[in-house]
Length: 418
Image (cartoon, rainbow, N blue to C red; front, side):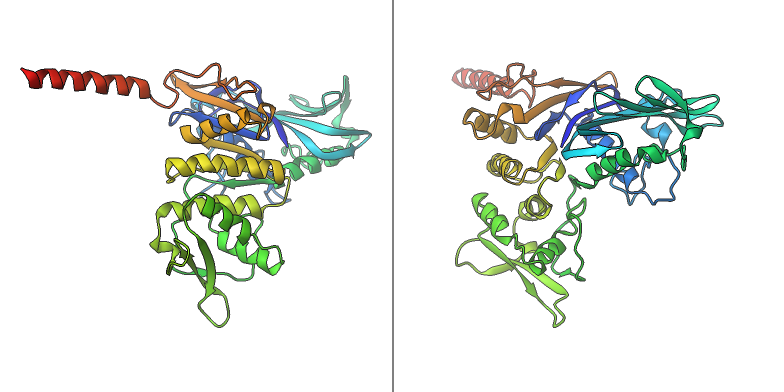
């Protein structure tokens, strides 16, 4: 589980400071306030981990086929200042205590800094693994790389260097740490805010996807894959669709003898006719990937969700908070989300007051932009679900609108009497 995240000089963030990450963490705020960029720091590291073994770059900034396409160093660094270094750090709790080299630990931190050096190429400036007690660090100097264990420096020549440019495995001695880092990011699954439109037919080639894709494009394959493995997830998904009052049931109907093509049929109400997914409200197809992902991934996974409430009615947005609480508690998932939903947040506050989830298991942040620089404030939530530092106009000026409406009404009524 990720416990802390920080970034400096990343896109609109000059410095996020150390952000605590809880089992259920939410980032709220206006559009273009930097919420999504915080998630992109993790996605950038995840796609870098997924690079081929012979890849010798420092960071994978991505392309159109990546989890996130940041372009280049110049496009990613704060205010496009190529003289700045870009820094990202993440801390996490290991699933169980592990022996890493000569010591055992259940907690690790990783930090890295990259910058433009020598003929304008992007190079590693430094990186560090730490368990809070011991530090393993490589720092770039004019004479080359050096290795630091605790407070002692030794020449990197004493170790087998197989890629001094890649912070995810530059020294053979770091392999246990590198493996722990990679295992963390393999557990991360991402669902973006732009989910795929529903189709009249879906093809399945018998594949078993790791997740459902960043647009939910693999959700049908995920359902069928679970059925083949005798781990049906339909029951949980249908129960939530009923609870959200969206549809009563669904089934995947094979439309070819080879059972490689299916149509997604739904009943909007009990005893009603079956229709295709394309013929019901758009919100159904948009929430389905969220539901399926929550029950498809292995227990202990980390889900990054962008606007899970997109295209949903306010009541459904509220109920979605209960789904997130359930899978955090019962499936030990960690949820890190970016949202605009007042209804989702208020339901979470209510559940804290009702002791359905502890305030210690949640962290909420408010992001805003100030003169081109993103700023963040942690919302102080007490044990009764109250936010004691609710930002002004957090979700718009509802009271101001009601006061203005009342004032306009009084003015019109007064004019009508004249």
